[in-house]
Each structure stands twice: as structure tokens, then as C-alpha cells.
Image (cartoon, rainbow, N blue to C red; front, side, top):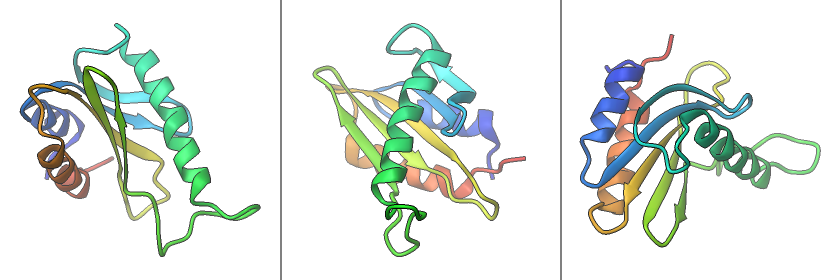
Length: 128
């Protein structure tokens, strides 16, 4: 079972991977990063993608409530002209608020493969 650094390095081994992060979506802090950043700074990338994660969590939450266990958001895919950003929420036994973020080159990356592998990494990731 990989820790944060091993998980991010494994993610960077995917075809077309340009950058990878583990982000706490409540604080917007990068708990780990590897590769390049689309904006030149890993912390800025983490903070910006945390806003997307929070919006997704709120999308699944009823007014005044919390997200339903029946249909929690698993991941988000953001497509740009040159790449894909895949955000995969990490489920843990404690109240987790972290996600894996993988930035893929649009021409060299395989989005379907990345989604499957990132899901596997999220399940195997050891936090703590």
C-alpha cells in the first residue's frame, strides 16, 4: 500500500502525466506534489482545484445537509484545450477531505486508463 510520495510517483508513471497532487479540499493545501504545475506553482494549483472539489461536494449535498452516501461524487474531469485534470476523491475510515489530482497531456494521455488507475491508487493510498 503506497504512501503519499509513492502514490504520486505511480500516478506520474501514467502515459501523458504532467503533474500529480494530493490535496486537502477544505484547506486547499497540497499534502504532496510531483511533476509540473499548469500555473507554475503547486500550492496555487492545489488551492484552485480545491475550490472545484468543494463545489462538487456541495452539488451532491441537499440544502442544510451533507452528501448522500448513495451517490457520492467519485471524481471530476476538467477538459482544457491541451489537457485533462482528473480529481479523484479519496475515501477513508475517518472523515476524509482529500483528493488526488492528476494533470494529463491531452495528446499523450489516456483519460480512461488514468481514471481507472487513479481510482485504484485512491483505494490503496495509506494516509497517516
